[in-house]
Image 1 (tube, rainbow, N blue to C red):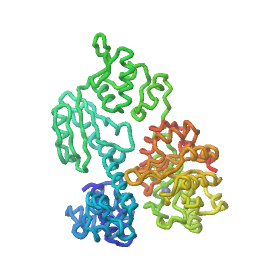
Image 2: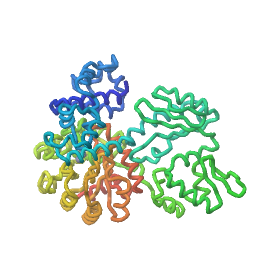
Image 3: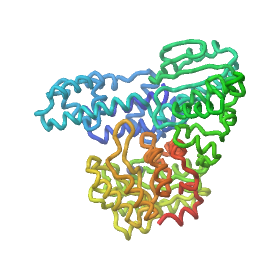
Image 4: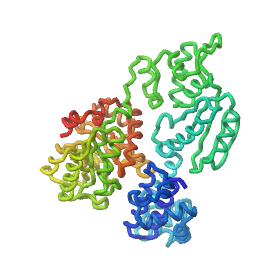
Length: 571
Ligand SMILES: [Zn+2]
Ligand SMILES: [Zn+2]
């Protein structure tokens, strides 16, 4: 069993316990263990064999025993019994925005509803109104919630697709009959959500590539198998398409299959005006029908007379014009990032101790890291009282003396409450190196109120960064109603930094918002992970990709600055 499979089972146990009405600490224990296992770099089977399972953060004795059973026998009676007791399809039901475990269980108990289809039918037939706590409005919310969920399900997160695609690529690359292989499609463009995974290979023996691909151990089902294109369903349910072309066509094919469609249409128009033709086989002079390039992807752009356009920009949002002028942005790169300014520790709802986080930050080559745990208002996340925060600051100062090569900054993630107030008074905030403030509740409020709450944090002179500014959770929660233009204007006026939260299901602000904030308002950003374990610091990769899609350059992002320059910017 892989880490991911074990984590998925633990998550499902947590959800089933939640529906059953178990205490929230018990439910959370399973979710935390699942998250922790998912962010491990080591293989859980190896840890188990070496007797180190209990060292995995958040894996207590009881859960460890269950994992051992799973790894040894491949099944877990405790989990099977739970599924017997509660129909697992209820888990789907509780994911509908606005429904939750209690209502899902209630609908099962009263109307025997176990699937989304049954619920949709009941809501449309007005059979829910009149039940305890349910009105016509609830029915309406449930119907839109189901539509939202279904829309989201058609696409998967970048961060789910990326590691799987990488594994396929690595295996294919090792085969002697594969000359080249790359990710193509929206995944190469690092879009926040992906439909199917597209891979492209170059080979002189395409049938051998296809034989190998269709028999890889991670393949659950072969949909189609041909000499130039095959499609499979991987064991985790994702569809992967592989195309194989001859090596001399590889560059043109890679360009073609990377898209976007809009980018390619625009390129073809430009080609036509210059009596050229581009397609998946190459770039041609139209008159003589003579092929003049296509082995390397760069040639397509060169022949068209523009600078090479990185895949992350290929959306036809002005990159072609800028490519012709040779004035494309100098995109931020992963190596530019010098630290992470929003990380949670085991002092609140994080899994890792601060010392461990600092070690992971050193491994990433960082110069600094800011611990920004939750503040006292956020009780569900174990928010810190002032007294506890002071104790944390002492620990950080001690660690800073002990550790070489990294500076740990003392920070906090304040909660902006329904009236726009935050957890601590100004006097206290002054003592901290960095203050992030974010909204964690009241998402359904009207636009004016949500905007006002954010503005009052922006105008607080001790708040440096606004965290996850729109509150969206991909696939689960739409961004809340907020007037971003007003927020951008105020942030620009007060030099308040806006966060690009890199947590894989947040990516908040998104690419388009980032670009608008930068170009129209001159805003600066912090690309943070909001990591809740040391392993999650690696999520910065998805933040940087989103920043690139938002045309950001290193100067736009304060955590590319060296520590002394960063300190000048933080209020
Ligand atoms: Zn937060
Ligand atoms: Zn946070």
